[in-house]
Structures are given as C-alpha cells and as structure tokens.
Length: 245
Image 1 (tube, helix red, strand yellow):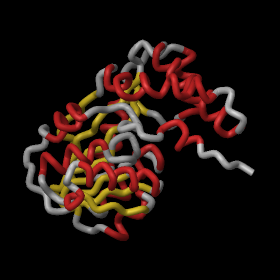
Image 2 (cartoon, helix red, strand yellow):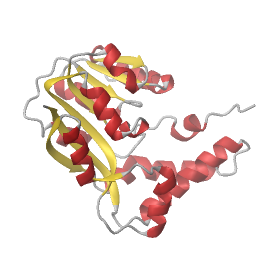
Image 3 (tube, one colour):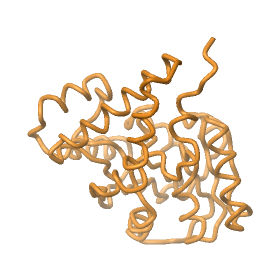
Image 4 (cartoon, helix red, strand yellow):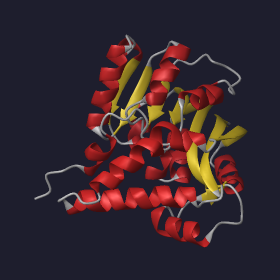
C-alpha cells in the first residue's frame, strides 16, 4: 500500500509550485488597461503565491480554486498570517467546473495550470464564464523558437506533447473568442530562484526513497530540471493577456 504522497514530500512548505515570481505577477497585472474587477477567480491556484500578490494589489476578494485540498489549507494559513484572509475564498474543485459556479467573471487568472485540461480547452470552457470585455490571464508552457535540442523535444513528446508555439497559442486564443492584448515571457531566473534551486536538492534526496511512487516522481523531477538546463532557451512560460471579445 502506498503510504507516501510524493507531492507533499517534494513541495511541502514551498511558496512556489511552478516557475514565476511576485514581480512577474505584478508586471503582468499592470499590463491590463483597467484594475477594476468585481469577480476575480484564480484557476489552479496551488498554494497561492500569486493570489497573495493580487489580493494585496487589488484589495478585492479573490476566489481561489484548486483540486488539491492541502494546497488550499496552506494558502489559508499564509493569508491569515498576512492578515488578508478576508480577501481570499478557497474552493476545492476542478477548474473545468468553473462555469457551473461562476458566471460573471471580470478577471480570470491562471499561472502554470491550464495545461491540466489543455490550453485550448481551458480557454473555451472559461470563456463561457467571463464577461464580455473581461480578462483572462493564462500562463502556458510554450515553444519560444523553432530550433529545439533533440533531447528537449524528446522529453516533451512524452511530458507535454500538446505544447505549442506562441504564434499557435495566439491563434488558439483568437479562435476561441479572445482579443490578444499582449504576451509576457518569464525570464530564466523565475524558473530557478525559489523553485528549481529548492526543488533540485529535495528531488535528489528522494531518489533512494523506499516508496517507488516517490522515487519515480523524484527521478522525473531531476530529469525535468536537467532538460531545462540544456534547453538553450527553446521553451518557457508565456503569459497570454487576453480580453473576452
């Protein structure tokens, strides 16, 4: 019987569960032509690093959605410690179910999470719940150039075969009813500082763990970091700043 949760062992206590940073979240938020939002939803919020930033900046209630309850508990603890628990309401639910719960979203935010249901699928599903003129800020793993090292291409053929170029994702956004305002690509240090620099030693320490699920998860994580180091800037996380047409 599997008694260990590899996600907990690897990510416990980490503020960042994916590449990014507070400065980048704020930079993208400030690209929007307005900061007046009534209904704000974060889809796939994790432990909510970005929500803490958004809540403080916007001073509005944010609905935080994630399907992993322990992440939400961590977010609640962090919000209370910062005295902003009144600005964050958590919901343990699947992001594909958003339209059944929220129908008039002014700002939908999703960092490094849309891939769980597919970028195109996510934009289509969420679009039905976003007000006309409302915004979707979605970061998505994207190819940044045509020339990709073979080892990197091979890794993502199994790891994320649906990854597309920026140009392709822009076309997807327009075809699913959005106007593209701009894009913002995370710099390399947003992958390393507070994320890979913490994750790599944790993963290496778990490679010899007695539980096979934990070992496999650790090995895959170490491999992912090695691929990033040899990527030659061929891929990255890109924020797609979109407005519902």
